[in-house]
Image (cartoon, rainbow, N blue to C red; front, side, top):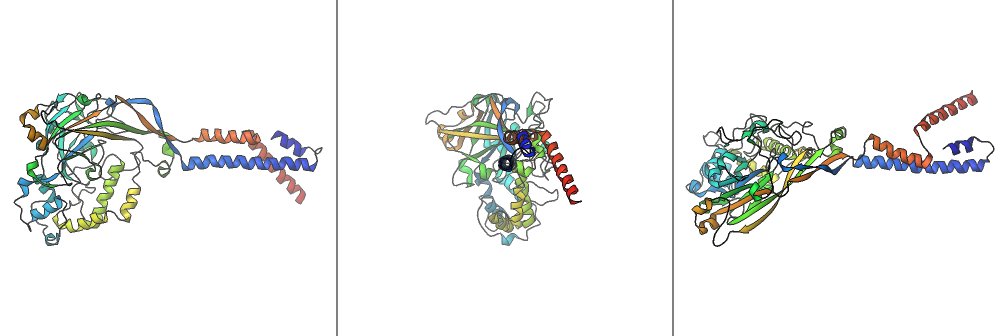
Length: 474
């Protein structure tokens, strides 16, 4: 830069030398500016990158996965075989079994005592009958103390290690059934979220329960009884169960994500945990650029904590409320005075479910970006059939039945971590103001010897030229 100024201002150099250096300077300057613009465009298109945390996270600092267990049998035969075609109970049974039929004759049946959720409660298998043995962290625990009944998109199921409704929802839902024990020695419900984690002060026994070690002996083992003789209709084309592992503050989606568990098999789910974090500085980047949302940036109507699944569940609730003026029993009641869909809504529900979504629903879900802080569990499942002779498990429950009954009705399921530690993924800025200045400054310095003081020189030259022009004109 100094050489250029010296050559141009020195009258001893001929005009072609001055022109040569001016052309070289213009070319080099254009290349430097183009490279600087390229750096900015790269940052603008990819403002956030995901890296690996340098610090390993122990599994005892995160909750054990929330687990939902469902029987594929949607209705117990002993409860529904007496229902006659044309009755309200029979109409609700068709909907429970996902069978297509006409519900137009029930459109005016709005004044009656039994509701569709109550019907499902009555005909579904209770958790006490479905989950018959539970061992967690090498301790035998009554299953009714750690599992509670809840509604999902495949009927009534049993959930484990989900955040207590007091911490999870903004207001009480009439169809939430908390079956955890009230015994004074039972686990105490505490709050948890991916950003803050557990409270600093914790009781000796609490839930959501954390992981404590690796291997099947340090995880959860449950024994499931399918009661095959009492099958009436299945959510699939066969018999068995479905399980789902997810974040304790998430809305489960059993239809889309449920994993099958076969009767007469021992199935093990090796848990691979993945924690996603974000540095606070990326808050300055617009959410559409960073493609994630901090939990305090978007408030949901029903859930206290933002997750993508919770947000999309509320979009589905809005969709059905808009089309049918009701919300299906398994979706969040986003408005305290909202109606739960019943028999006289079934015709509309069938049309809405076949439509899946409309433009408003699609736009709503487009705003449901991934959480900037999230905890995800990836199950690695493997299954082996029961032995033809003796079936072995940590529980003595199996000794009460014959081998034939065990192979035809029961399943043993294990959930466990395989590693004591895992590394989180961290969302960070691709480049900040300091890094951008360093990159562009290096390019400009390399190409044209640019420095910060050069800006003052440019301003001086501009004013000098303007003053010179004014003198010439006037």
